[in-house]
Image: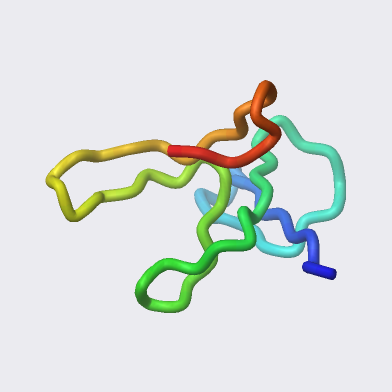
Amino acid sequence: MREIKFRGWKPSKNIMEYDVYKESPNLMQHTGILDENGKGIYEGDILDTRSDTVEVVCWDEQQAKFKS
């Protein structure tokens, strides 16, 4: 079973806070996928693809999966 992780943007400190468990309007869920450097990809991340396009990771309700 995969671990469910969240991070949240804390505008008052201008930082991203990891392992956030409280409700927040700036909460982002980990997708369970790692990038080429081994760092976690979260909902709302901006991806620079190899085809010179930029995409944003988001949740697709109809297909019940993360997509970019």
